Image (tube, helix red, strand yellow):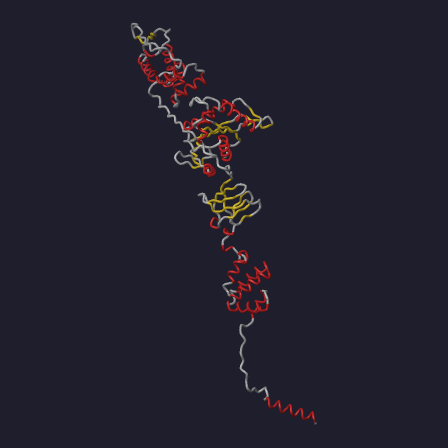
Length: 521
C-alpha cells in the first residue's frame, strides 16, 4: 500500500493515526481511498517496533504520487510509478468525493467547483477525474426533456428585501414558474404563501405567457396540497376547482426529491442570484415591476445552458403556439371552509345566515362563497344548497329547507288553503274563494279558521252554513259559527183535536152571540 503514497501523505497518515483519527476520516481529509489508508495503517501497526524507512521517488515529478517502499533492513531502490500529468482536480479530491457521495453529477460538481472554489480547469477535466475515482460512483440521473406546451414547474423562494417603514425591512416570498421546454419564466413576489396568492400567481403567469400548458408541477406546499402522496396526493379543494376551470392537471412532485423538478430549482436560484441578490426595494410593487423588466431584458434573451438556444426565440417560435388558450373569464376566486349547522338549520358566513336541508342539522358542512353566491356542500363535496349572497345580519331561508312539521298553514299561503277547502265541498270552496276576493290578505286567517271548523263539524253542516251565508252575502267567520250552532233541522209536532185547557170552537161562537145580543139590547 505504501508504494501508492507520497512521503508527505505517509507522515500525515502516521500523525493523524497517532492522534486517534479513524481510517475513514483520514482518507476523507487527504482525498485517498479508505482501503489504501487502512492497508498502510495495518502495516504500520505490524512494524511499530521497527519503524519503516520510506524512500520516495523524485519529488520533482509532477505526475501522480511516486512509489514508496518500506525497508526493514538494508536499503532497497525505490520504485516509482508514473501515470501521466497531475490533474487540477487532485487538490479538490475531498470536495469532489463528498459531492459524489450525495449523488451529484459531474456537470453539477464542475459548476460548484467553479462557483465555490474558483476552479480554473474545464468540465472535461472534472469528468475524467470523476470517472477515474472508481466504479462506486452512483449512476447518473436520467435527464427528461418535455415537449412544448406540456408542462410547467412552480416553486417559491425568498425575494429581495422591501422597506416597510420605520427603518424596518421584510422579505417577501418569490414565486417563479418555468415552462419546461423553452425555459420561459415568470416571477412575482407576494407577502404570503396562501392558496389565494398561489392561484393568483399561476393565473398571472398564464396571462403573461398568453396560454397555459397541460400540467403544473408544484412541490408539496401547504397552500396546494393537504396530504402529500406521490401516487395519489390530496389537493386543496380550491386548487382542484382551479384545475377544472383551466382544464389542467396538478401533479405535485415527490417529497424530498427536488431533482424531479430541477428546472424550477435552478430557476429560483437564477432569479435570486441574477436579479435580486444585494437589492432592496421601496415596495412590493416596485420589486414586481423590476422582475418583469428583468424577465424581458435579461432572462428571455440569454442562451440557456442546457438547450443551447435563446429562451425568447424558443418560446415564441416553438412553445407559445402549443399552449392552450385561456378561458373567457378568469378563475372566480372564492373563500371556503367548514361550518357547523346551527340549531335553526342555518350556517353563518360573515355575519349572515343561510339555510340547509333539515337532515343536516348539527352536521359539519363545507361552504364556498364569493361576492355573489354562497354554496354549501357535504364533506364529500356534494352540493346541497345555493344562495344569493346576503348583507350582514340577514337570513336566506329557502322553503325547501323548512321541515313540513314546522310550516304553519298561514305560511303555506292562500293557494294551499283553498286546495284543502275544496275537499269539504263546492259551497264551502265558493264561499272561501269569495272571502279572498272580498277581503284580500285578511281572508287568509279566515280560511285558516274555516279549516279548523272541519275538525268539529261534518262536511254537510259546513256546506249548509256556507250556502246560507252565500245567499245572504255574509263573509264573516262569526256568521258561520252562529249558523253552525243552530239545529240542522226543525222538530214536527202533531196537533191535538181536544185539550182540557182549550174550549171547543162552538163555545166561543155561543159566547160571541150572547155578548153581541147584550150589546144590542
